[in-house]
Structures are given as C-alpha cells and as structure tokens.
Image (cartoon, rainbow, N blue to C red):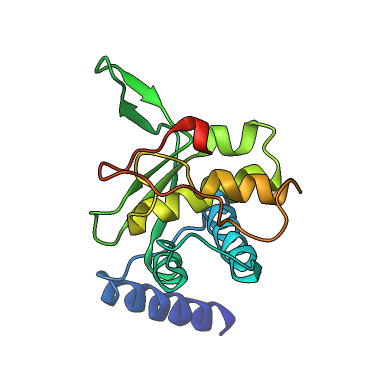
Length: 172
C-alpha cells in the first residue's frame, strides 16, 4: 500500500510539473543581491545628507533601484579607446528592458573592497541607469569622500558637468 501511495504521489507531482512547462525557475545570485543591497544603503545615506547636487533626483534613483535587474557575470568587458576589450567591475545598461547592471563576479568577490567602495560603485551604476553619471564619477566619488569622513554634511561641492557630461578633474 505504501508503494502504491508513493507511486501515486510521484505521478501527481510529475504531471503537475509537466503542466507547468512555461514556468521558469529563479536562481539566487548572492553577488547581485549584495550589489543591490549596497545600492539601497547608498540611497539611505543620501537621504540623510543635508545637501545634494541639484541634478540628483532621489525619486529617480529609488525607481532605478526598484526596477533595475542586477546580474553577476564572469566577464564584464567594454571596448577601450583602442577598440580592445577592457574589463570593468560593473556595467550599466540603461536602454535594456528592464534596465540592467552587470557586476563582475570575480572582481566583486576577490578584491578587498570596503563597504564604502561597494556603495560607491553601486551608486555609480544606478546613477548611470538614471543618466546622472554617464562619463564621470561626480556624485559617487563624493559619497566616497563623505563616507570616509572628510566631508561634513553634504554633496553640494559637486561641480555640475558641462553640456557633454564632463567635469574638470581639478574641481572634484
């Protein structure tokens, strides 16, 4: 009788799984989870600051954090100035649906990155998704300065980029 019950139970589960053929599983990704958590932590810090750059929209950043897919990968290369692949720690793809951030699994886990380093990188990639930091680290580098205790109260010292998104390195 026990064998019959087990056989019936197995058949029921097997047929149910066959009927769910279009349902996909979801895999866990610790690197992606940790990256996203550091993005949320950066947002929390920004919300507590007294001053922020005028072009930093916290609601836009919150939306990016909520809607961006984060995926870790073994390789995250972009073409360098000479056309040869250059490995990056992370790449933001704002034009993908949904917007996506690729995190280099090896560099995220093997480098001795501090919490501040990880928050700064995560913030930079999310700000790339919203279009605030595309060709520079204007705001994310200031978060690093603030987190290291050398700025007292805000990020208002961040210079605004020119019409091409560039800023002078001496003004940071």
